[in-house]
Image 1 (cartoon, rainbow over the protein chains, first blue to last red):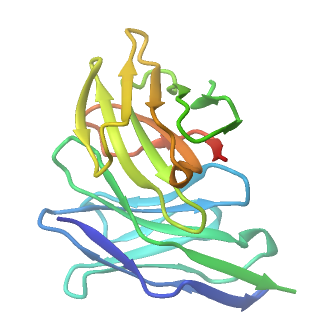
Image 2: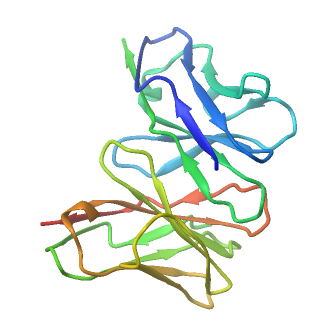
Length: 114
Length: 113
């Protein structure tokens, strides 16, 4: 069975400071890992994905994540937060069997203050 | 290129009623998955359709059923609605055997009174 644990339910940062959202995963297979963002009353948007290629993955809007197999982690970072980054972020794991079932974490709400 | 579309946007039903939600996948996509997102929670996988058949199912009761049409669009049906079925229902489309990237629609907000 696969699962992800998002270690923080809320993260607060000031505009212009770095962002770190933490995620640990568990998977019996070689996983695919994703970060999705959800703005209020909006659908889910894919930020980035890891599918066994480069371990450092760059996504949209300046976000990136590093896959660390030894630590079973896939933390999301951004060097400088912007007010528009305030949203709910989900770490997601999927196996590579072709069925593409996504297993979501419980989410981390990012708050950005001026 | 239109993305994933869902209808209706909002829906209010009473306990015991039945509801049908609709989803049109992104152009070129052949697989549709449905997710339930309760307030304050992450989405949970309901089931996935490919070639008009249910291929995989999450931990949801038989009250939840679906259908996929030859044009790849899909419906989610929920019978005997319970208060706990109130949630945002998300449809996601993808290409079978791709890199697992799924594109999500804006969702249907279902309220059960």
